[in-house]
Length: 227
Image (cartoon, rainbow, N blue to C red; front, side, top):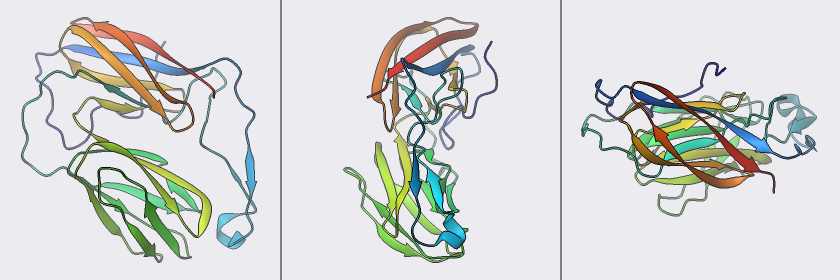
């Protein structure tokens, strides 16, 4: 039985037609043995960051569900155009960790990077298609960044080497991020055959074919293998 999901359609894109009653619900699972959790010792700014950090590049539930896997359609249905600017999405820095670790923003959308820590951070991106940024950020200062082009962008902090965040710039509305149980949902789909792709920062990418029926949800399991 599928439970609640963390994200459905990407904010800022138009809502698919109400006549499209199909949806895709699924779970991203790790195939094989789950790697043992890792911790990193913290040697600076322990008064905020703590003495150690969990390495959260792969978080797996007891049932094998993968957190923060991004799922999307390689061949999405056509969606109506929406010229309104998409709402901004926030990514914070709390206790020397990006929160949330993975966000999805539509191409042309903006992320407001926040700093809730009582120390200095440094935002540093390594994009291919989007403009790079490298900005110091004291507490309380929001830094808005617009991402014009679809791609997956890593964000780090030069002052705290363990800090990693990911911005997935979406080309269309049909993207989702898996929750703590590995579950996701893509609603508002017309019936048809789709190629579903999944990316996770440590596991890489995988894909699968699925036929979506209308009405009612179609369910699937996406398996990924530890590297």
